[in-house]
Length: 189
Image (cartoon, rainbow, N blue to C red; front, top):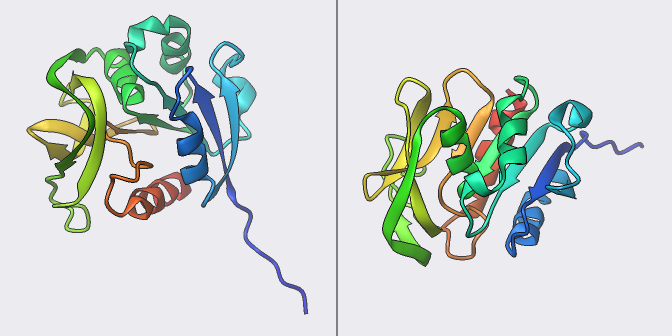
């Protein structure tokens, strides 16, 4: 008897000198084969077509501090699917002519409760580590969940982009597998 398993999805995680990068890699590795590339070694998405998912992830700087990554995101073809976590979502916002403003007080290592019309995520606690917040162009993004009247989970209406302002990989986030499964379902459609 031969046991076969379905091929795992693949993900490329772009490291922007972030101390959380390998936490995200570990979290994604439950469902994806994950490679990590430093943002300065990342050439363009055309060279990375073999990946099902590309993840833009940042730390305490502004997305405008990485103009080369922003340019690569702006020139992204529809495939592969792009996930922006935290400042990755903020980079998507800037790329689509939204605004990113200072959020006060900064939420570093704090939890908030999601509000959503999706029953499975409504009321879930999520970890936040940010001092900036997105003002999304409504015509471009659909908001899946909010916290404190701020977008926390969005999907682009015409591109294969999804973004989380919160950290789904954090031990402070309730039910992190729920978000990982949602990403897998989204990438697989």
